[in-house]
Length: 71
Image (tube, rainbow, N blue to C red; front, side):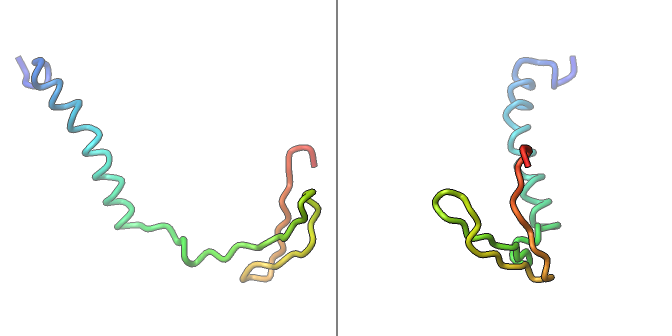
């Protein structure tokens, strides 16, 4: 009988799977990190009622306004 089909082998496989998944995600993060520090998003300053008070463009000079599905 193959080792993965035994009761002990099944538990070892189930215990190792999350660890291997975490290890793969960690390795991918180290190999291909996201450009979090390079992102300079546009900012919109709003009042307490949600109306925009002031807008700041992003690093490329693009103005971005928040929208909802109703808009």
